[in-house]
Image (tube, rainbow, N blue to C red):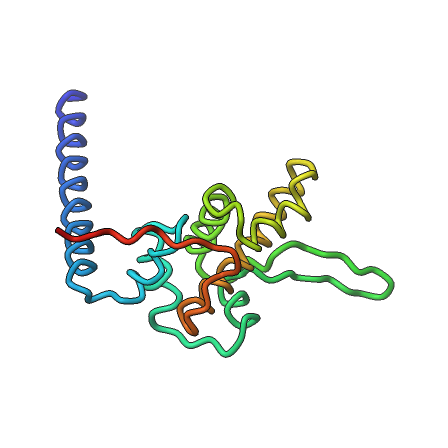
Length: 175
């Protein structure tokens, strides 16, 4: 009985892995054929891979117009939520509205950005502000960096403005 259940779970896992490979192959094919220009453009930046670029374009940049940076950050839940009542002014952290998966991806991309774009203005800002601080402050800082990063990526896609000090991946020569 237990063995049969384990075998069924193994078969399900095999099916899911095959489906994931098929989806990834279809995405690679679309990128190679030039059907996803925003994804390809975003993936040119070092620290952003095709999967992350795909998610950002499909979940954030590909279907919605943002009037300004505050609207963009607000839609992702990367804005502060102050509490003010009487004499007390308390910061309650970020709002956490919007897409949780994208917010998590942006935090991961922010960590990658620090590692792979050490000369960028965003990395230098983070290092000046949070690198010497404790663990908790670095975690707070990485969310602030994620907010600044998504705004820089939005400007990159809208206006072609490469984030200050950022490097693109080397061009791949096609044989």
